[in-house]
Length: 373
Image (cartoon, rainbow, N blue to C red; front, side, top):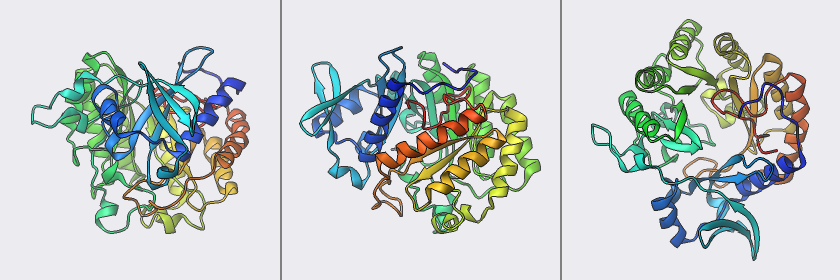
């Protein structure tokens, strides 16, 4: 699945990529009768909150490109809606079929509970085929102090247990692995008021998982300026099976960073650079990622300069559309246009290729938004 060379753009990948962005930036209306069907029979534990994953299948090699749909307020006007045609599921645009889709089956572990009685689907979910994801703490300290990142609605991310323990995470991962449906786990968290900002819990979760099952792990964390502690935690994470680090900057535009991220935006870009450097020293190139959000007031120039800045360090910067979440400060915003996203992807493509970065990502299957492009 993971190539050692940049993957070339093809006409079919371009079609899939355009479909992916059109669906993400418009949302997909799901009729009430299908909501119950998806929740019961398919991998859609947060469908009632407007969050679900569909897959687009390549006709060339039958590989699946996952599409995370976040139906915020903007989605009520979407021209796209889902229908069930016999045993198949399709997306229609107004009155015409737009595309076939593939849904992941409802995993058996969703029906189980942890030893302390928490439903496992509230602990971790399938984010894409073979890939388990969990957000440990959904009570972010920035929200608690009244200074959340304005695009964030972590407390509503899915119908999850608000403060998951490493033991619950490991138990759920083991159940998913025994079912034969995962080989990688991504762990993230809302910021905690702790020295490691919650990375300590992520590392402990990775450690407990590694004791139970042979899977690789991605650690997704907020940057910190205690670099001695950071390196210690990251090395412990690697010893516990972590292969990939994800530290999201979200915005490179210095004119708005602190406006949209009242706490995180105070951290200089230089801090992220130093954090990424330490991640690269431990995990290596193509295993260190960051995310750039498009559509929160930034300029195209800041995005492309940010992609170049990160790539020149060996860091893959994923450019993703802002799909405003219900519960976020920016919940009433409109996503960026498909045309803008396609322009940014086309402009970013030679930057990735220039620095030899893999468009289909590292060990954990992390990818730039060019996956499917």
